[in-house]
Length: 410
Image 1 (spheres, one colour):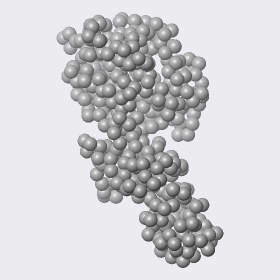
Image 2 (image 1 turned 90 degrees about the vertical axis):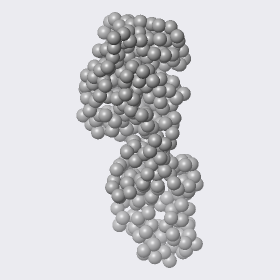
Image 3 (image 1 turned 180 degrees about the horizontal axis):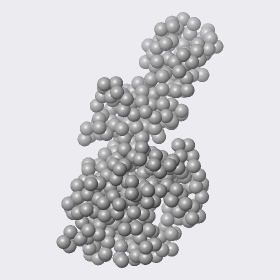
Image 4 (image 1 turned 120 degrees about the vertical axis):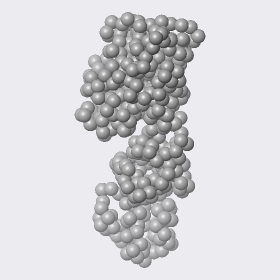
């Protein structure tokens, strides 16, 4: 069969390789001049290609339509992906949180291996080929309009990605093409993205990395909506880093159409290894060590330098006060502040900065066991163009690979 695939990203390449293995004549149409642009920048250029947790645990890490992905993830698991990429000569390693990377730390090794395998299987990739529409006849996909020309095929796979990182070619073309055919598009929202805070004092700490901290998001009813432990970053306008990116997904129900968030506070436990009592004892030891110093000069063992003025200001303790004059009540307030440093979430950063797009083609209009459209015969979808998304840690790329394999196989 003649197969046309729109998009040479992670899912499109995987679909092409799988379909070619089935003996089909496969052409991938890529509108930019390069394949796998987003793959190259994923995992900060290291490509976090999957996660090593048991495949059954994947679903706990997929807030966006996890049930739809059962067939895809079980028919091509994370173990299958690791074995496949290693069979192409790329050794892998597992890091904190089960994140799987190429041993070389180079995303280009993953992309080059996929391209080499595609070439070996005679998959053709046509670059600078913009697909304008899918040609249908009696609700059956029969071809494409590419750069103004008609090309016909037996089956078509749409793998155009979402709308995040527009520079990689993800500009939402697939949504327009699918919508024209009657598919419903769930409005795209930024997922895995930094957060801006109401508090402007964050700018004085910009660039500060906080390791081994825990965070909790609470709504205005003081109900916990998300918690996590790990690494985060303070930015000029708010917070970012791994645990914040995943936390951003939990804010979707509290967000308006302009990404503004209502009534959510972020609490950072700066010392999660210590309970209140142990932390107070630790502070008392530090105060004993610096007993002849002022409060502002007694926190260097406890906090990063740029954070000290901010903590002092919020604590309400006079910075000029001698440490041995700090009252028990003030000390207890300091403990509470370090165990739940508060920030008010203002908004999610723009979708252009998001690692992943939440939203896309409505999953109820796609057959989950084949990835075929329920509206248009011989049209298949895979990857981020579908309304599925996961937390950070390699889960999103595995979804792209697994849905690509399922679409390619069928």
